[in-house]
Amino acid sequence: MWIEIKRKLFHLLGLIYVVGLVYIPRTAYIWVLTAAVALIFIAEQIRLRVPAVRSWCERKISHMFREHERRKLSGVFWIIDGVWITVLLLPPVPLAATALLYLLLGDGIASLAGKRLRGPKWPGSQKSVSGSAACFAMCLFIGVTLLRPRYYDWSGIVAGAFVATVMEGLPWRFNDNFTIPVSAALTFLVCYR
Image (cartoon, rainbow, N blue to C red; front, side, top):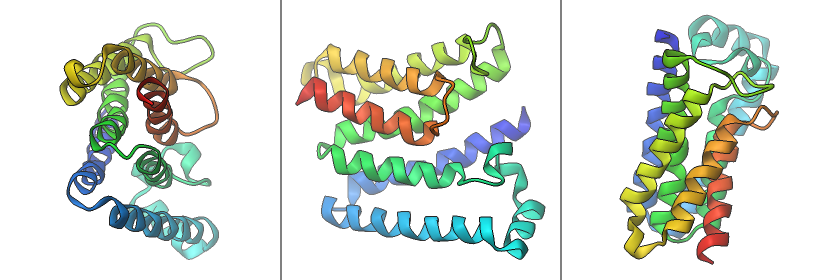
């Protein structure tokens, strides 16, 4: 459990993306994110393809990687890609910030609650029903807090929270660090046009 807590605390460093979204002009922020995507992709390729670097990562920071990330692109790459696409899709800062926080806080609470509370798992998945319930509650809270139903109607707030929760719980190959914010962004686009 302690390793998962450390992973989620590292995940919270992603709040810097929300701060950048709020304080950096949109065009400049998109360029910063584009450069970050390229740099992280290059760093990941070096980690995966250069044996000395891979060995160093295994010794020094292996606890930060899930087993499937040791030989594939890590969650760091998928987070920055998800942030980049979300910011490109959603010009309104409150909507983009909400989609990003669904990932940073909703996914984080799902993992911690699922490991702590345990309980039944979704069919064909390692994700728990309790984790999904915690994710939905957190995403709904974020949506209500940032979008305020008097500015953005309830349909988008509930739909965004629901879609983010489904993306967090689905047992598929796509990394939820990418699918959660992007699917929430697409949901907001549909609901709020």
